[in-house]
Image 1: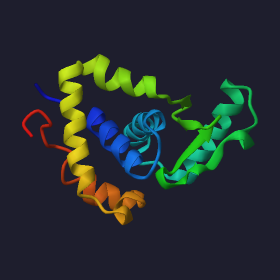
Image 2: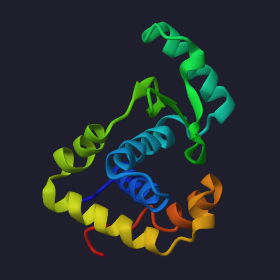
Image 3: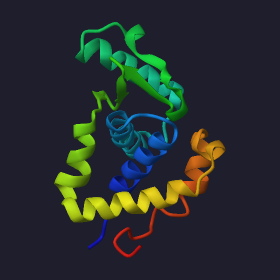
Length: 151
């Protein structure tokens, strides 16, 4: 069975967030938000993404763009709305992670994806985990095409 990059990125980012001290529920939300960010905005700068999301928060959520918080998840270069990650015009929660990993792939495969991610994160230093660029280059790129089912 082929597992695409999206659930692998989500799990890897979840364990990155856990290693950085976030609680389990928020780590899951960050994991899925980060995977979504990479899928949607891989070629869009953070500044331009913030502008788009600010407009959408005003239009869709009828909220002031100033309510988007840039500091809560600064390490991940994600904005927050009501304390949760906001990317791609959506607030992400732990349930979104569960849907993408366990409901989509099943319990057994979901666990294998998470075990694969956990092993990778254990070998990443805090310096790497705190840097979006270093994390991408040193933790994600070398492993993104690995098969979690064979590790």
